[in-house]
Image (cartoon, rainbow, N blue to C red; front, side):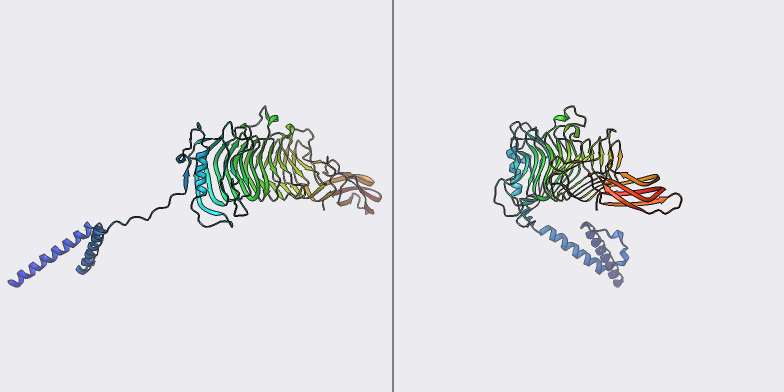
Length: 482
């Protein structure tokens, strides 16, 4: 009987112990054992879990809170925190310059190009405001990179200097430690209103600058000026001296230049230039223009869409662009490609002689549309003297509607009964009195085989003669390039 009582007592104690263990496990916010088959857990296993959970709870209750390490200040400089007025009623020049100065003097994260401190992607945030500016936002010191200025509008005040730029990437101090002033500076999501006083953005001797999604207007000098350095990329932006959608009654009075590239290896892509005397002025080499729409000022009013002032060495590609009533002028072009572009409203290409050199020029696969006024798609300006060095020039495969086709390749077919066949290519050839290659086929209608030969090439005219008269068709191809 005593043995039975002892067994019952031990059973009750064991049951209570298991109940307490399960409850403790649950109270410690661990997964409930109901999700598992408790039959697979031994009493020892449950006791081990209980001890571990108890130790965890005990540690959490008695552990002291460890203070976090001091967090670094974020690399975002809000101009409104510096006192800039986002309503544009008061002058915000000093406030924005203060934010830019702090960003440039912020913590460095190694270097980019030699001597350029990496600012780690610091941002000067304009907080979506409109800010009145009375003098250029000129960077106070050189040798910095990996910085963004974005997100707002800058408006020149009535006393803004006429020769200044709203944003000036040229250092106020001259203590440069690098071959370049700045590297990887990005200006994006900005509207710059120059108020007909000065220009929008100036970039001097900088490396890998991005100007992205900007609207620049009311400039009286230049919208964007790039001088020296290389790899400035201007993308998805809109520039115009006057805000217009085309056909402006004051178009003949437009002045200024939207973009100046006075450096090498730059790119302008997906950009619209809607008013200026000159759309893009290029004075450096190895630049790329693609996806640009110029309707800045019609050629008939004295405007130019793209002007290449690079006599002797252009090394420029103009592709997939839209010249809308305004054309392209290239001085003594050497290595120039103009292709897959659309010229509307009698817009055309001018090759302008400075020292009479044109070499390595391809004007191919373009579309020209005009008013049926006899305007030639490619013209020569030889007011300074004729072109006397012409080599590797291909002007071909362009399609024309309402304009006069000009080419360096002429094709003609002549039928008749004669001993002399003459093809005159003056109406199609670009250059006067220049034929470098001739190919022809002589096909008689009666199966005869007379002796024939190329007898004369002069004045852009080709003469084929046969020894005797024959009824024949002569196909002639003449080329002005090698």
